[in-house]
Length: 97
Image (tube, rainbow, N blue to C red; front, side, top):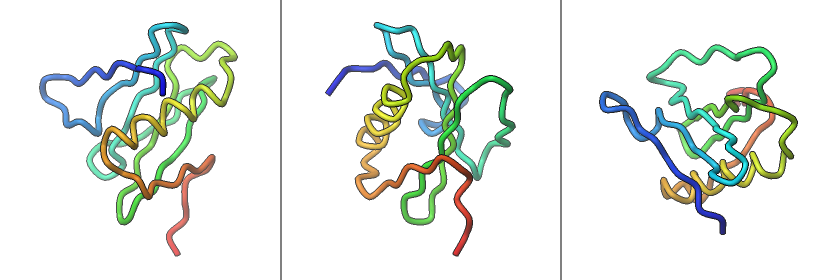
């Protein structure tokens, strides 16, 4: 698996961070959907992850027609980093069942 970098602000939790791909310079911002207000940005790509009772939003920063598989790989790498092995990635906001 590729190595990505994670940046976390001093006052933020690990679920409010940014994933960096050093080779393509793509960044994916992570939003803890419960603790932070997620407002989609125009021109960026977003995905959502559900794992148990958790929902996490992901949005690119500086998207320039990167391959979608790269974004999904970054998200899945991050989920493994968090130990969310049962995580499911969604293209749209997951509806409660």
